[in-house]
Picture 1 (cartoon, rainbow, N blue to C red):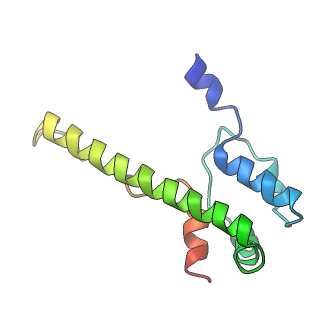
Picture 2: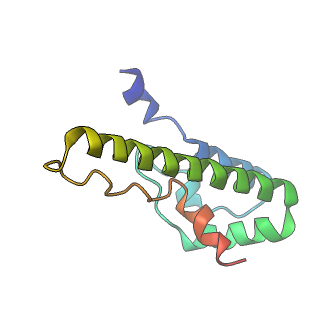
Amino acid sequence: MEAEAATYRPSVFDSLLGYLAARGYPVPCDLLYRDVSAPVAPSPGLQDVLVRVHRDDGAAAQICERLVDLDEGFQEWRYRHAMIVERAAGDDAPDPRGDVFAPVFPDLWAVRSLL
């Protein structure tokens, strides 16, 4: 029950968007008021905002970079978990690595190539 309830609360990423909006950045409204139970999808409009954040606001840019570090840690954990599952299940198991490398915060990764 508690885990299911957590899927209806704003995520860390939603909190970042609120923080950026409070600092005056034009975060797209459809992201600020999105269905928090839905996965985060890349947004070119948000990526434009994040480029501005990185260029104009050192403190907010550092928060974004820390979230990229956190995302990288998630990816590493998922990879290690997939390898453990693969070892335990043996050769007959389906490939558990499907989305192991999919980022949790795709816009934060995408903006790094735009800077």
